[in-house]
Every structure is written in structure tokens, then in C-alpha cells.
Image 1: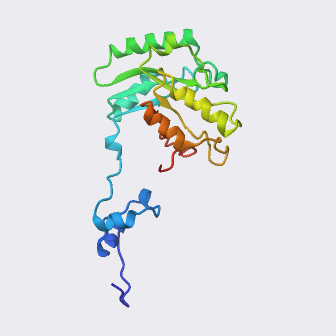
Image 2: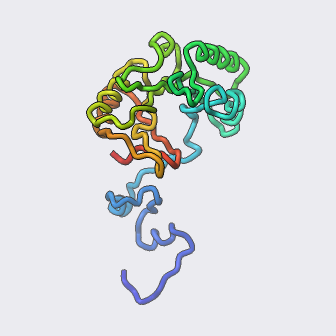
Image 3: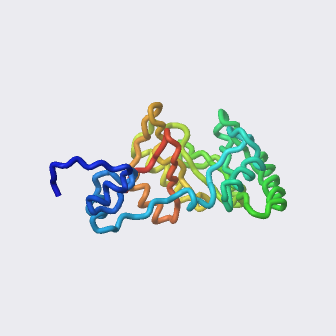
Length: 227
């Protein structure tokens, strides 16, 4: 209702109530029908920190992280997490002190020993394995099949054509050892452009193969748009 009176609101929620709308969080203000949904009162509930029960992509001082597995587990416990997965880089990421098969087996043994001491949090074994330029993975099936979580990621040959990149990532998605595809666009905002990849096609393949595409909330990544 238009009036000549200037109304002031202390908080945004009051403004939306005055308009007869469900409050629209900033994350949903994308001109994709959210106003109509707010009129109907059918906006979805956003994920909150209290909803997060664990973290499945973590690096420790075994590779390019800064803290030990035990320190990471203790911090996760303080956050109220129920589980974490230790997913170091594989050996192909030499710059990140990636783990080869021998070091990975040693880490798995350490994690199993730590789990015997923990009672309120569980540490999952895992790896962030490189997807090579030809679509093969940087570790053999024998070791990956023993892990709780296998994340696959592109870290090299990022200038490949869209066709080659699609075949490369699809090969990883179709690999039975892989559970998650990390940072699918490979972009770093302000530093690196995204790779040439059809994310809708990759998403369809992930659904077909029951795989997860990572929603990477690192400010420099923010990979996935609404699809």
C-alpha cells in the first residue's frame, strides 16, 4: 500500500512483515521466484551451523594442513561434530606433500588407533585423489577400496577442452571407488578461471552414479550455482 509516510524498520524481518511476506534471507535473493514463494510462505529453510554433523574434506599436517589428526578431531568434537574424514592429497600433488600408498596405509593405522580412544567422535579414513589428465586416478583400487571416503579432484591440466574435461571427470564419477567430486569448477575467484566443463551434464552423471558433487564453501571457490 503506497503512502506518503516514510516508515522505518529496525530489522529486515519487520520490513518483510509489513509487506506481508515471509522473510527472504540474503542467500535466496536471486530473482528466481523467491518473492512469489515468500508471498505463499513456502520458502525453504536454510541449512544452519547446528545442522552440520561433520566434515568430509579435511587436510592435516600429513599433507598441506597445519594440525595433527588428533587436534583436528578435538576441534571437531568442540564444534559438536559426530564425525570427520581425513582426506589428504594423494601423491600426485607433490607440492602439497601428497600421500603415496605406503604413507596412506600408515595414516590409516594411526586413525584406527585414535578411534579406539575416542568415544564421542569418529574419524573416517579417506583421500583426495588426483584425477589425471587421461581420467585415471592417482592411486590403485586396492588401497582406495579400503578407505571410508574417496574424494576425486582435478588439480592439473586445467586448460583441456570441454570435451576432454568432461570425459576426464565422467571417468572419475563412474569409478566405483569414488564417492565425491571435489571443487567441480576448479575456479579460484580472483586467481583462476573455472575449467571448461558442463556442470549440468556432470550433475546428471553424478545422480545416475549416486555420487556427490562437493559444495565447497571456501570463499575463493563457491563452485556450484543453483542447477
